[in-house]
View 1 (cartoon, one colour):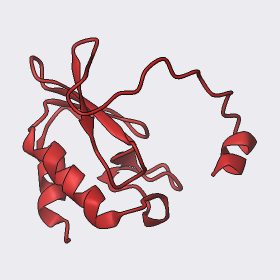
View 2: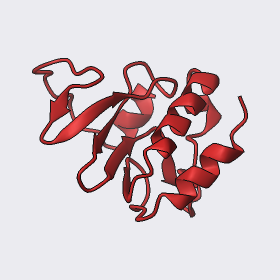
View 3: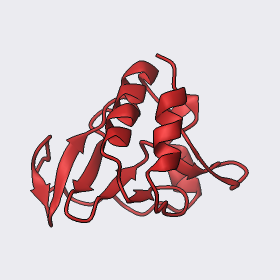
Length: 122
């Protein structure tokens, strides 16, 4: 993965000022631990306006074809599929009005996420 990032122009790392954990707040967002995709993966939830930043817990476009659509990240990029799917179901239960992704356009409805979570096995 590091070689891919170097090849496609990822910049240098950023110094860590503090470690975040479940329940911390950052600029009005509550930190949610969303394990499974990668160690230490986090999502950010702001209940007042129901905005959810999922990072790479989900993608709203195929990273290879660039076709739009809500999916789990490719299996090869997820370390613990069962735990990851538990995290997805937890995010869906929030019923967010706005969902922001690391890959793909913003969703402005909870329905696609809820449907995906209902279809997941394991």
